[in-house]
Image (cartoon, rainbow, N blue to C red; front, side, top):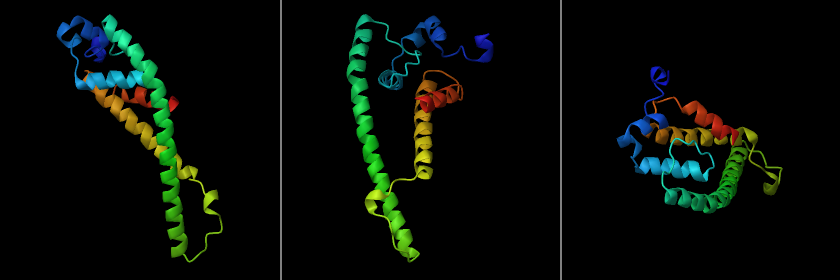
Length: 156
């Protein structure tokens, strides 16, 4: 049934039967594995087979997950500051163009939701494309994992 749907080719089951495909370890597969490991997604399509590989994966996850959360917090704060300052700059330029004074203090101006939500959607879609691209390199057909990856990123 899986062969009829075209999902068998490139899957974990197919790689287990095809030893040459099973032993492949490329840059893309390593990046995909590392990204799914430290983002705690863990698709399970690629796993370490040896004891040392599994042990180092646990150490990598114990260090990488908290480090990723700190980096994401810092990057989020930095992007929020940059986007808010850019919005304030554009708002001041627009008000000057229309010959109106800005009545609010600059400290009280926040990035509006109508700008923030499309940016979040763009981020989710770009992460989904990265996952889809790396998973496609592992043998899946185009379009199979895109909806699953989008659902996963939008729910996380």
